[in-house]
Image (spheres, rainbow over the protein chains, first blue to last red):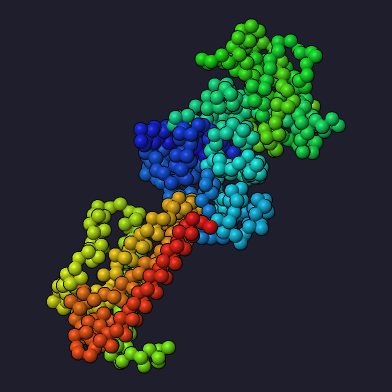
Length: 373
Length: 236
């Protein structure tokens, strides 16, 4: 099922005009605060009626202002995971979890509560009230409550924003599993580049109420023109497979026939991974470098060079492992005489691939297959 | 307990206490659904004439009770437009009956009830109700499963406050339904009547003690429950 969204809305001098498609998998709505992400997701939920718009999922019409159709929220079959959780304070965790299931049509109740409770590790909390839960526990209950509502569409509005780094690391894997196990579209609002890189199948970049770029995650993230990321946060996402764990504490990954070395990963050989390589961790060399301490050298062809007003330039390089971004100074680009079409070598320090940037699961379309090394 | 009370009180006094309890109970319970509806409308809806409705609800709080009683007599009396309609259609007579005393008590207690419930509704985060609707709950179900449980302590507090006010109602009652022993002579009317006759002070004093006790108990109870609202809405 693919969700088609087209909206126009104006309020308080803010003007929203958005059109995008969300194929199955996880679509991240990405952009700075004030870009209209929450407004957009509330319109999809039916909590906000846009001035004009049409929201459909295959032949199922959620909203069509031209023909006057507007399904109320309770008939849209959603699983909405709110930023603040919004658990019902007067109900126990168990009652919160089963609330949506209790409202859903009997035939649609496909998720087994026991399985969801186990997946989220909240079995020991069932008899507590939300007030007695930690932030991370509340987030997990909110995810479970949305899943058990037998949704046709999952909406998540920065579900991790209220959590510290440790809790985020605890919750992220659940969204990866959701993306890989549940065959319904997930709309995920975020302004964190790391979350996008780790979770997104599709990225819709928003800025000031407009879509600036939309498409498969690997393509959008490797596009230097995607401004919401900012040059500092730019980075490419690569798919890779764990090859072997070396005795010196490093793990070797295969990507498109190339080998990448990263600090020890806790995954069995054969596991598919995604890596995020930040643009500022990549150095470019015209010649194949020798006598260098960096372990990862990816040969490729320069696809594009972009520079803005500042002293920096973003170079995108097509390698056998996928597209890699490098952030260098404009001065170096000139001194090296870099031009699109040239063969170049991207040098990545092994430590640059932080464990935080490594996510499990394939879950990406538009990525070159990890390939066999 | 009841035996001891009837022994301590004379039959006339006991009758007044019992009538007062009956009138106040009916006044409170019958006005509760209207109280919740009015509070909800004032807290959540915007409609033309909202301030006028708010004013009418609060009027009995500021008008001299005798004026309220007179207006009730003019409207709900046997010759009044509403009174005549009620008698013709349902055989319900309000003037100079205990039912009229209950109506007067309900009108006088209504603003207190609405205020307490309205505060509770305003304390409920509409985002919780929105969350329930995204989970598939239609509006009546959202109200029954989210709004109502969250405002329940406020409803209880408002009901107790209204009950205490109804127990003490005097001016509007005596104007509307007079002071007929066994029919419309509630506790305050009885105290007033006892004080008009020589040697009635003892009976009056006993009723005063009962009135003070009931009023204090109701206030304390409503205070305890209000505090629980705050804690519950905070979510702990």
